[in-house]
Amino acid sequence: MEETLKKLVNLGIGAVESIQEAAREALNRLEKEANNLIAKGETIDNETTRQIREFATDAAKRISEVASNSSKTIKEIADQAQKLINDTIAQAKTRIDDLTGKKENTGA
Image 1 (tube, rainbow, N blue to C red):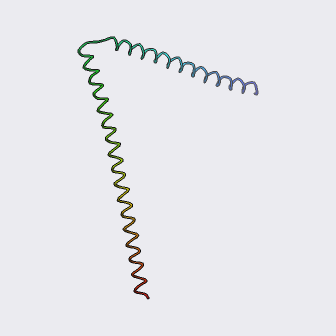
Image 2 (image 1 turned 30 degrees about the vertical axis):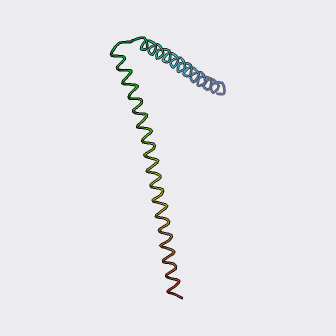
Image 3 (image 1 turned 135 degrees about the horizontal axis):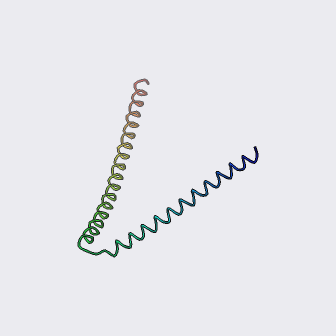
């Protein structure tokens, strides 16, 4: 029984190690293939590829601008909301103080 348990544990360890090795090898192959395709793409230069690169660069700039503007807009909205909340709390405190003061004055 103890020997069988050891074999099962070793089987599991061996399986995990084999899967990790296979995953590392697959990732390395994928990285090499991606780099080969990048290198190949860099060597292709014609009107179509220039337009595609120009479009991609322009799109990246626009996306970056939109993201930047969105962040600014979200911050502005958050700041306005925080100011509104603070103002509302201040008004509520003033109103409570007024009501509390009136109750004390009428009761005295």
